[in-house]
Length: 457
Image (tube, rainbow, N blue to C red):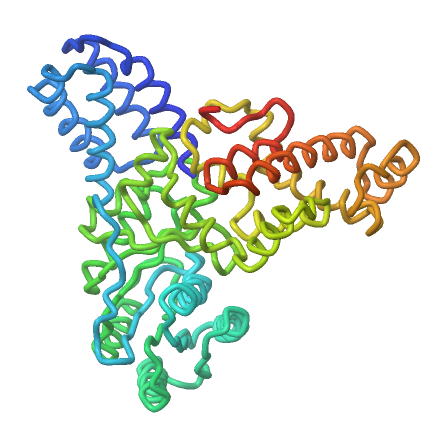
């Protein structure tokens, strides 16, 4: 996410960070690079102009000249302006209404609207403990209704049936009436999308909005369309009183232009980011954390939150108790740790939230990014017998050949896994005395590709 922008800005700002004195010339050169980085990221031109002017105004003023570390002060200004461009703070959903609180989703076809309905339903159910009903008012695509029904079952929220012969307004009314009878907290209404903004579509969605009177009207837009995403959001905002934006397919967007343009152009906050295909791949949008990630400073707060949500606490307690009582840490436990990491979005998802990850070797990052490493490790462990998993010392020459053959890997891959397991085993012994995030992170470096360590170690 935002890789290109992050790389370019990090390189540019690195040149100025150590300066003991900033002059108008070196500020001018750096701002030119910042401007180019933003334009290459497909940030809207008016946003780029305003951003660069704001940074320049603050940088040539008292703020930097009186600082003991002018280079660092300049970077702090850039970070502050990035946050301001994206909205400064997270704006949560406002569900303070007499139940059911109605959320209406709008957007163009293919933006990921129906998937976002399911993701949001799951987020509200699991993190906010709300009962949720989802309904499709898309009478133009029968497949959309069926898709939502399938997703609703997957995320364990209630689905209200609808039919292409019905009118969208009637569908929404019936769903809300049903929710009232069942004392459901939130109703999410999926609306029809089009391939482009047209008058008929806007008239229909206006009528639907007037009928359901939603507490939140969220515009769903594809991040990979760059500044076009902001322009489309603006067109919808002129027709509907939008309360926020869900930016989808962010995991495929290396530029970040949409995230930096939408707030400025529409005046509406980005409330969520769609960061993958899985039904739990929806993150609240925190401008301060995103700005920190863009500048290569990591996002440790989000990482801690993900660890807290993704780790099975009962299993973690059992493992801690086992290790503490001298039961040891075996390959069954190691495989369990790999699966827990998958629940947290995989190694790359965790790595990109750590400071300085951009300085890691590209070949090592590529190995993590394609998910190959974790999958290969699991395959190797799965090819072992139960006895071998419990007693790794048994795994010698002929056994290694058999395991490599069974997992479709090489003997050196098996050796590497055993080495990484040994490092993890040592870390678990240390952790048995006293736990903590710091030790966990240190231990995880044993699961990284050879020669790769977490930044700052």
